[in-house]
Length: 256
Image (cartoon, rainbow, N blue to C red; front, top):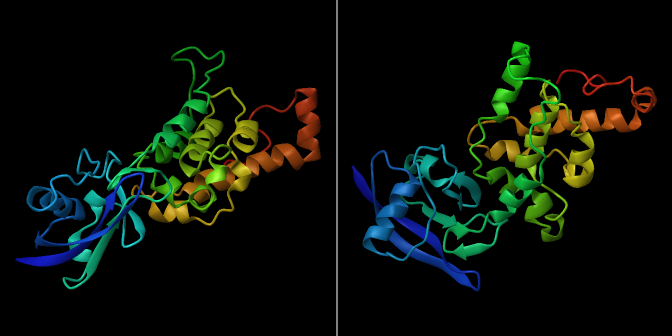
């Protein structure tokens, strides 16, 4: 069964743009990306949209649908009523290149600033991990880097000036993953707090709400990282132990 749906799609570039109205055919079982492709094929061949896998695994087709950050390929048309007007706009936090395509280079710049995994003196094959440590890191590795969490975070969404000093949920989660990894020899707490702005996060959980992989970014990454930073900075016994060199990485915080 097919029907005609009303779409409002943002058209423009870095200079200016506007919402343009379209009426597009919708077939049973389709997602919003299918409709955008049909719109390109029938009415707007110059419409720019970024996509790749169409399976919710590449993170390329991030956009805002009726104001909610989502993946175009994972948003089914059946979630909307046939007489509803569906508005599709580019993600708001990053500069528009054209139409629905934005410049997300901010995220890759932040990724390069995070020191990579440091095994210390551990040789390949020597280290053994507890299963709970494996499982904890595995959740964070589900990230497809759609950057919807960074897009919705009000710290940079509403305050452009914070981008220089705030990495956003995606990369604070990366730092947290490395800090929690028992084989990583580096202490990531100072990096998270001073270099990547962990203190800006006020744990509203908006990043968790939009994650298409259902990663509990706030509860399992950001809050535990904040606890580790606070333990290092404000616990007098931990401070003294670190000065004397008798407290090793991760000893001052519970397994979170």
